[in-house]
Length: 496
Image 1 (tube, rainbow, N blue to C red):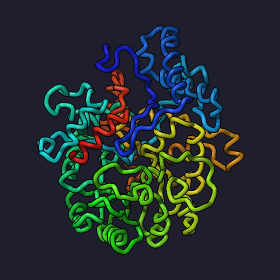
Image 2 (image 1 turned 120 degrees about the vertical axis):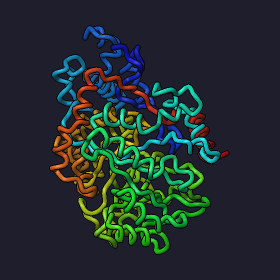
Image 3 (image 1 turned 45 degrees about the vertical axis):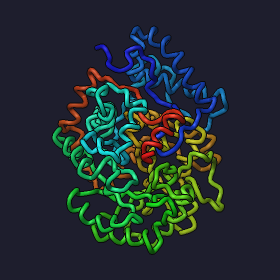
């Protein structure tokens, strides 16, 4: 089969690059990451010849993914980055029987942070300038439908694209569609459009594979009052909110403040949907960003709110990770930003591991893939202090394309024994991976083990298996890769 995407095999299956989800400016790759990409690309051609297949066919195979990760290990070790690594035998680069069991996996994968936009007529409205900005993103040049027509590039970010990337080109079993912190008029994906995508997935006769959030920003007038209606009309599974968001760019709010946080929590309790997902860590470069963006992205309020509301589950999106800070082992102190601010808040409020606070990995894990030593520290700390039963899977896709590369990287990632002994981090066992991939999030989202078993044999799973006989993944990342692309998207978001 001739590939529609990258027929020459120029794209690696594991994507380590400068792409962002549009919430922060691209960060240059460090030398060890550039070396890793270069080594993987250089070795792919030789390995493909030895395997007797085309470069593209090799890279789309389990051996191609294994070879890429092994090249990353080699490059990282050359730079002294040995605290974490991808645990694969060298033979996996050429032997499918060695690669496939480690990279294919059979875990239940529940991605609780998914995104797409909708190409309906609303994109042609004057206030939807973001639609124009999307054409500057790398994914705006995908081959879905007819991207060369006016606004055709928006098709690359739609529910149809989401279904292909999430449910066919990755091992994801379930996902949650979530939202951005805008006014309702400016939402690039509205509640009804998210529900339409859920219905699209349901028409495949799957077992309720797609859930939706209810977006609420309590310092936007009327948002809290909308919550019961959202629950009634769209059967939302959790609430998504942003403490950094404000209408006029002034101040944000805290989960435990009396004006905004407490009323939101009270209304969540009243609706019966007692799961609140809070964006923490990554900054928000939109017109709704507060003047103290990074401060309100810190997690000092999480522990207080969790202690005051033990009947509410708080899922901290991005785990509070701050891309401007390099993570090491946790040292108690006055941590106001980053994953350490989450850990400090839990300790100060005597919230033990495996309580009512969860750490989500969207964008965080993908960013950590660039530095295995930092990855070992962040994952190790979250397992230690938030709890092995409270770290949950999310990818922020489709902004980063298919999440399959993130899945394969996490399936093989291991914290080095030296770091486990020195810092008390756990070994990442198959049982722990399975918890992170889906079992941990099944609890707050109300997914039973019986439901999980049903999905293993439903029509969606059969369609995925049929597709994989002639799979054609794009290996694209879709967000801004350069500062110019990021600033163009930011300008369009602000309507400048």
